[in-house]
Length: 244
Length: 296
Image: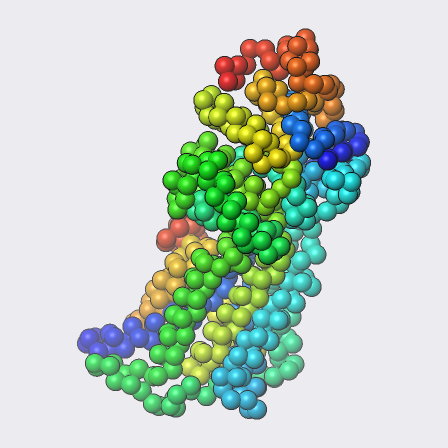
């Protein structure tokens, strides 16, 4: 579904990613874990087209998307839920969701948009309750739900999630991870999940990668990574998210 | 000062205030999608007025105005496509210099085409001496045209931004550019559209006001300064506040004539601009917190 080879990217002269490779098959949940500043967000932003890559290949369903702008990549079916939600804060919940469907309107699939709105409201009933409220006034967890819902309205086949658990209360973190697992079951999505909360992410992912200072240093099935001594020490040790 | 005279000043103030508000709304539309002030905004107003005057010789007045607005809209689009669109990561300063350069360029081109003469469209109804008596106040019918058309434009614009998908996409771009792109919205096209919209609105403003204020190749500059003052006064990016701030400045100006020599009229707006920038850069109706987040 998604195959990344030797991706290099960064900000101007600052190289953040060095020869990063990764692949995801259809229907998989794959997670990339790593500490702050490892380059996780840069990685997703580069795939989604918000940042230019300086080298390597990004193949989405066998098509090279490395040089495409962000707005084209969404219309191909690969949608990013960005770090920090990035909602349209002065607009209502409903407006945010409808804007997520821009590529669908362009395809003249107005009927599907209506269905999708209903599905998102079934998935996140709390968004339905707050339909006419401004996005900026929602709680952190609700904002994350809205960000995911907005991405779903473009009818993606693949979802990129950037730290969905960030800044949420432990209970909400569990809820969000449960929702992500449901997305694969109910929407048939392939998911690439980038997380600092390694335990929570590995619990729902099939496979995981460990990103450290711009390089993939480890990869394997989630179960193996959870048992790996280095991973345990560096990412699963005493951390504030432990009880999440 | 008796009540009738007082009201007469208010009416004069509202007339000018409306047009300042229209110019300010043009500033705001572009500011919201790009974060820059388009210093060529006054030139759009001038272009609209001048084109309409020329066309009015061969076309009926409404058609001349319509074509003038369309022509200016195309000019707005061309400006964005030729000078702004291809810039990769333009700094605010660079964009400002570009738009100032453009305003000079447009003015010089206009000077070559139309010369230095001062022109005006005919009054839409009646002549320059026709007036309607409302209570003790005499109002030129053109004033009603200006206020009426402006009100309709503001209402349509409000509906466009609130209820149409295109308007929502433009607001989304203003709220969060990266997120808009992730929704499949082409931020670049929205910027082009915002230049077209503000060019068109500026041109319409130039047409409706030209019977009263006249228009010449350089009449855009003072309007841009007033419009900019009003945009700042209301709080950058806030179109509803601009309309209110426009009225305020127009009325202040018109009363200043009763106490100060008329030559000082323009000093008022520049003085207000400076005071606001020093004391309350977020504008009368803006919040200081939001202003701090803006690039300038």
